[in-house]
Image 1 (cartoon, rainbow, N blue to C red):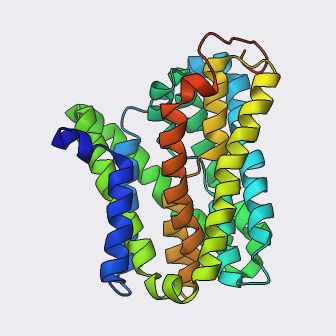
Image 2 (tube, rainbow, N blue to C red):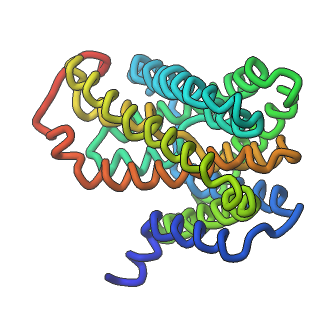
Length: 311
């Protein structure tokens, strides 16, 4: 396998981040500040090429609505239900689940739609709408479930920081026509750093509370793999067009766990373990995405078509 293929493989970087975190541990209090910079850089490059045209709004109005429902209703509600089971165990872990539920979908769903032969243009529109909606929905969810534990204005401030700055930066990056492979490697390096910083800051907790971590892994498996299976079954049975159905599955399963990690580290500074569910979810989502894209034709053959929710 060529070196560029290895560097472009996200699961390799996630695995290296996990190992590095266990080997070196925390870099100290500066971790949260570094994570903010890392996420902004990663988001800026990820959003490069994302366009939003007024004429497309009417054409994709229905898919956009369903994309928001998949991300902020189905995914968020399931995440909150699963996370609530940890309330008796650890308040900090519960707060981490809330952060995971409140963030938008992963920007990578746009690239993923290419792998799955989905409707990429619709994916771009849905992603744009979800991130605009997140400016209001993310602070609202955190306020409703965390109350005074985290200021909704503080959440809004960081959401604006994590969305508007990358959006502006991505418009500047367009002028440089960055090569796709180069962008993928850069994004993977940033994901490695997010994993290293999040898990490294919690290495002692992971080792001392391994039983809780194993339950978090199981919970993430249900949230990601089981939810993905159920969503696929429901969408296929509903007669949804395969090209759109695959995209709806992505929005139903794949959250921006990197953003959730950053919010947990920054806003819940006294509860570093709050980032653990978000970091574990990041690993599990990577594994799920690898399996889902590899076996997408077996999961949902291209020839199967439909019409519901697609117009």
